[in-house]
Length: 207
Image (cartoon, rainbow, N blue to C red; front, top):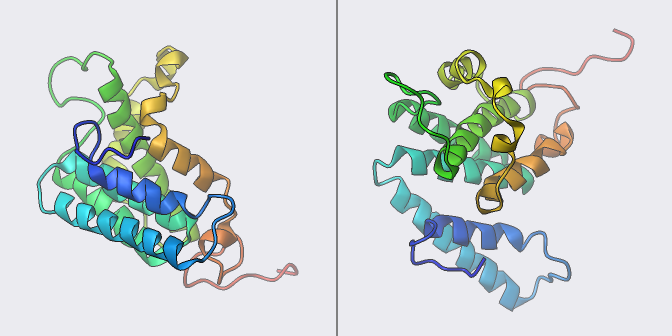
C-alpha cells in the first residue's frame, strides 16, 4: 500500500504490477500525457521485475508472479499474455515440485505463510481450467497432480472454516480472482460466443 519496492515485505513486482493494473480502475483517469507516462513507467518496471524473477529458481515466487500476471491479463483483457503466463505458472509448480501436502511426514502446522501457498496453488488450478473453458487454453492437465492432491488428500472440509478465510495481507491475487469469476465468458474471449471454446463453432438454437 505504501509502494515500498525495497523487497523487505513483498517482491517489487507485485507493487509495480498492482499500480499499473490499478490505473485501469481508478475513477477520473484521463488519457493525459502524464497518466500515459505513469502507466508506461509502472508497466516497464513490472516487466523488468518479472524478468528478474524468472532468472532465479524460486519456484513459489515464479508461480505466484505468473498467476498475478494471468489474472491481470484476463481483466484487461490480454488473452495472449494470460495464456502464456498460466502455462508459466503451471510449469513453475511442476518444475519446483510444489504441492499441498508434504511427500513424507506429518502436514505442516497451519500458518499465514502456508495459507498463502495453498491459495496460490488452488488459484492456479482454477485459472488453468478457466483459460481452457473461455480463452482457448490447452487441455488443463498441467495441474492434474495438485488438483488430485487437493481433492483427495487436503482435508479442507474437515478444517475449521475460519482457517480458510482470506487474510487482508494476502488478498491481492485473491481479489483479482474474485473479479475474474464474475466476468462473462465473452469478456475473456470476445470473438466467440459464450460457452464456445477456441476453434469450435457455435451451435444454433435449433440444434
